[in-house]
Image (cartoon, rainbow, N blue to C red; front, side, top):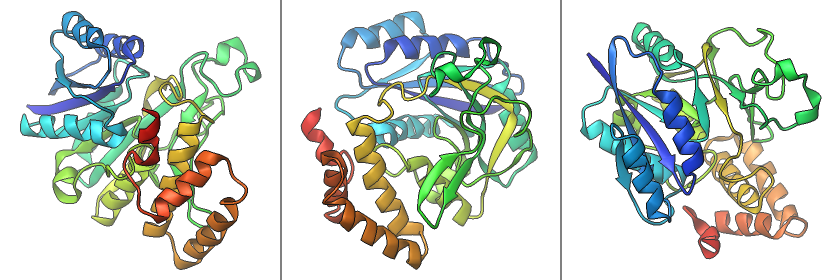
Length: 305
């Protein structure tokens, strides 16, 4: 029987982690076994103790310091692969899942051997929408956060297809996508064996796009499947528009663009970044400087943690 390792990070977020793990208790698991790995690098030892006590079937991997999204997930991925799993599910701790989401993802990948990474439809959790006053009460829980990933190679931006739209079936076609979402992404073990792990230079943001592009270049299909779905408490750990958000998005966008974009886009990024050095916020400027001096990983953000 196939095995799936579910990798979740907990970084001072016990409330969200507890709710996520509780929702996972009801998932359907016919034709596969699963183990949940919580990589816990919270500062409060009581969070670790709470997870161990309330969810004794979960494998808790205690780490210290801030490893970032990429580094933290890699710890769990490597442990799960060492334990002999066939698939890895990366799942944000600030998510709630439907009971059959993993069953559907698994069965699709079993029937489509060239699919290396797959993500489901992801809704905003109720009350976590960007524009809370825009929707009717009956529409909450059906507002799309991710229905496939889009990469604008000319301007070097990544975006989520369908974001902020109420789901009316407009994105109900399974299809290849520019990137799977690290919020919820099922990956075959063979993909990690062929291309390696999440890029720890990126630390936070753009690592799922980088992983997806590497998988595609290695011959795997990266797919969005709308039949399974989960809910996301958007920006639960970083906050949209925060300094952290600005810093890592800006720096890693430059890294990604200079690695993968066409020459014309690279020249545009160079011009744009030089102009922004004199006009942007302090953390945006720091991000640009850090990229050009290859101060990657946690970069200058280490001064704040």
